[in-house]
Length: 329
Image (tube, rainbow, N blue to C red; front, top):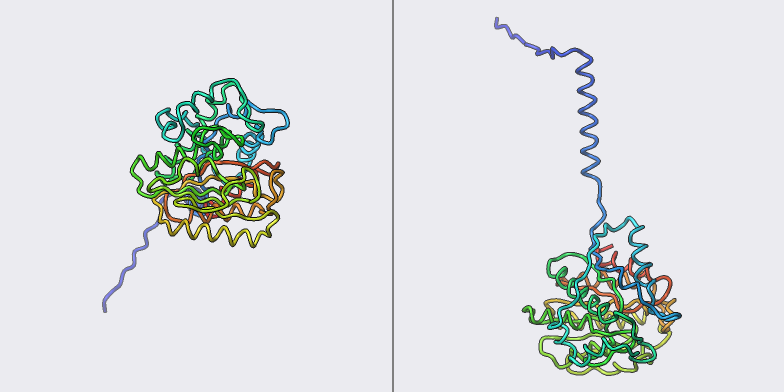
């Protein structure tokens, strides 16, 4: 008969130590499991500068709150982890691709440009930082980093040689020309501000490898953008249009944008088609701007984002919704 000997190894450590080690192992395992399941908020770079909130005209809708109120809300919310970045002033050689030298010099002269577009001390420097924000947004887009340029003044009404409609320099147009100069073959600007981006159109019209898409209310300021031509694609919506009909027009604009097959898209993000905006008569909600963010981010190409208009007290909510859309929320 063969004998089978079973040897049981015993832990020679005292019972108290073994219990303590077991508890520690359980705690460590639990913490590891919680860390693995913890979902950190997505990260977004916000390009802004507090200096752009230091000028205003009493009663003017283009007011410091547009940036200051949005910054305050973004600092208070917990859904998005915000990294803050400051823009540099756009270099003169990049500005002069879009504007005449006379226009650049005129921005430094202490005279109002029109009834809506006042001269403020340092306004040229504010506008240069606004254009610099669009350029930084382009850098972020090319690096695949979610971002938003949150600066004033806006830019899409500024033509090659005229400041108008609260705008002094065509920030997004400057960024589009920079993208082309840097080697992009097909660059698109998509403008969903409720007003026609006549300045961007003026600067980009008939330039090879560039396309401008604008969805805007008509009739409305500045009264342009009623027809498409060459590389400029205009989509008009009537005042008071139901949301679902606006969406159909927006979907057509996005389909045409896709058909252009851009290498990079720059969004002129205006929030004044909102139902509560005082300057126009559309019926969009925060969810519509979330849709814009999600749809444009879903194009699968670098997307640069810069703020244009939006004048209601709810602007911080609208910007936040757009950012959430950019992040797929």
